[in-house]
Structures are given as structure tokens and as C-alpha cells.
Length: 60
Image (cartoon, rainbow, N blue to C red):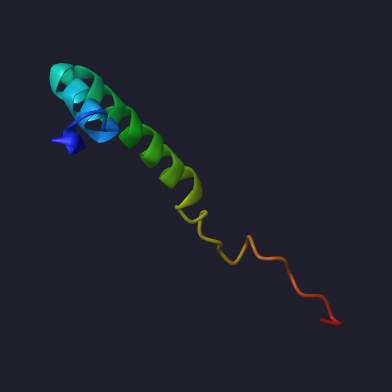
């Protein structure tokens, strides 16, 4: 029985069951922040075309 007393995990689960809206709010916030970070850092840049590349000079 000692495992259930003063255990932070069980206290968090009890609070989550009593207030499920808070859990859904944090999950939604995590999804929004995670997808924003992914879009900022994870996507490649625009493709380069022939006009975007620098021209080579004679000595290069």
C-alpha cells in the first residue's frame, strides 16, 4: 500500500482524472508547439533553379 501513498505519479493521475480539460489543453498546446517547431526547423527550403545558382566565372 505504500506505493500509492505520496507517489507523485498517482497524485498527477488523480488530478488528471478529476480535471480532464487541463490535460486536453496541455496536449493541444503540445501539438501546436511541436508542429510549429517542426515546420520551422524540419522543412527544407525552396528548391533552387538554374537562375538562382551563381554563375561560374572563367577561372572557376
